[in-house]
Image (cartoon, rainbow, N blue to C red; front, side):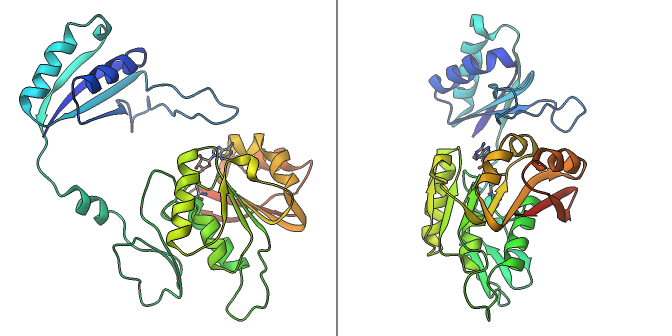
Length: 300
Ligand SMILES: C[S@@+](CC[C@H](N)C(=O)[O-])C[C@H]1O[C@@H](n2cnc3c(N)ncnc32)[C@H](O)[C@@H]1O
């Protein structure tokens, strides 16, 4: 295969990507040309932040073609279009054949959350020490167990969920707010929770959660955020500091008396602003840290 690489300003990305699609590109990807430099720009579409844009001020657009002729023809046709003004051709390059499935799979190994609780891709054997496990493959939604924020939430679940000897279910009714792949909701089920709502603003995440729950033989209710109803003994939300601040009154209203609120997606330096945002309802404390991220919890 051959890739055609272009540099485009943000206001040309949609037109150029559409044209590449129409010119039979197999795929079109857009990257920040300034990634990993001081000029890197974060793009979020979270509540309280500017709406997401099509790309970055300087975007690298890469289109994959089955042949060199196809890539070069697309280049020739694009450069004479009005909407290409301000864009630049970086080149056409051969992409060596790879076993993409094997390559992707090799990047996802089993992950231990505690010595006996593991997240294991379906193409791997369960490690012998895994007394509890979640079977999960990387997909469209966030949450494979490798990110510190997810790991800290899962550790909290493992510490506070049912031990093998415990009677009943200490997690009670569980809400996973911003469920992504559903990993936290499924983790809660693995530690004894039986009444679980998992919600997300992204319909692809809702679908992933339902499929992952099924694959793990777990029963839960996955839906959009309006599916969260009433009070829960455990409310988990691994989002980001800005939406967590906006969501403070809503999330606190879902915590039952004596229940726990567990928040992640917060950097160490954001602890005080989160404490302040939640202070009218609950007192948040830092309960765990990993790689500059913190877990904040509160009991009602
Ligand atoms: C960092 S991922 C966490 C996924 C998973 N819970 C985990 O711990 O790995 C955050 C998720 O929150 C969702 N999200 C972001 N803002 C939200 C909001 N205002 N309401 C509900 N979900 C939201 C995103 O779509 C995304 O799936």
